[in-house]
Length: 272
Image (cartoon, rainbow, N blue to C red; front, side, top):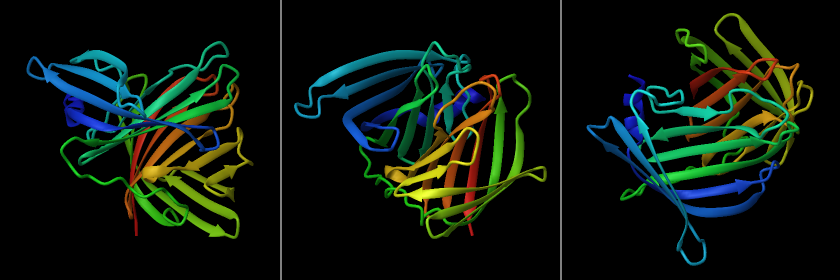
């Protein structure tokens, strides 16, 4: 069944790879074309990624890869949302994860990367539309677009293969001056309250351990991650996408206190 979910992504996707600093500042923007074709009755998917020189439009990079059923290699949800990345943090290698969403004729992907010392080093925002369509990009995400009460459902897939879980969610965000108040609950057992300092398009949750930062990005995207990962504290990496003014999806990768990946959660929530 999981393999069928990948079929939502078949097609030709034109867009760009936008590299940003840990503070959300754009460093480069590279035009791209991703082709996903189904072969052998869709039992194999051929992926071809091309990058183009921004000035000459000449092909600057090409990568080809084939994926075969049922060995998909990364968790994917029924609506096509997925994430793949490091399954264990350690101090001798780069660490990171990719998050992907699809809605209609648009896709949004985001890659978070950390240096071997655990510090957040960079992110890449990938905005794509299906060729031959006029699917518009979402507006840049603002804090005002997120304020209010959100209710939804969370589905969690586990790295050890246990059955998925579902739970109701509630998220309340309200602003008082340059402070954001956050109240979050999952099901009936988990409740979390925190505050963040608002600095432009950055939300700084400095009282959490480790400190967490949220970047508000183009195309309705958000990037949530610790400023540094290290063993001894569980942590999570998250990417959000405001698809419509009152509809948002979030993907959350959870890691245990030893830096091991334990689960992936998709939250679909509506404001109202």
